[in-house]
Amino acid sequence: CFLHGRLRYAEGPPDGLTLRVSGGGISQEFVAAADGGANIHVTAEQLPHWELRVIDPDGRTLGSLTQDGCPTADVGHVLSERLQLELGPRDVLP
Figure 1 (tube, rainbow, N blue to C red):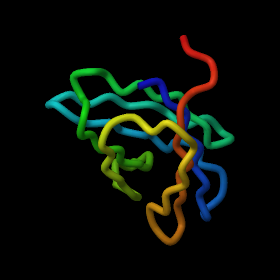
Figure 2 (figure 1 turned 90 degrees about the vertical axis):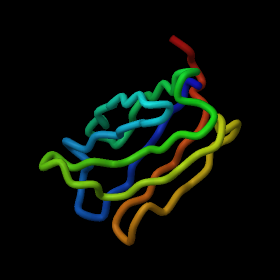
Figure 3 (figure 1 turned 45 degrees about the vertical axis):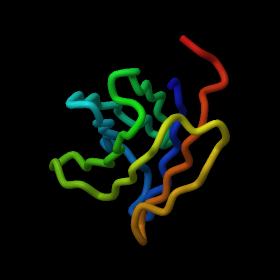
């Protein structure tokens, strides 16, 4: 799955936030850009069930979600009172 995520964080710009994707015994980390965007690649080994956690610079989990398969459309997720994530397929593939 090649995905694009966009974080919205009530504390201000999501500078320094990391999206950690885990599944199938494999974890990968993707750093959010200053605008909250991040390109994410979920590998075949991580499918069909995988988890995404948003980690702050101090290593604390701010929110998480579990997914089955690859999203085929943009979907908004409320991860906490202060944190939202829009997740969907990437328009341009690498």
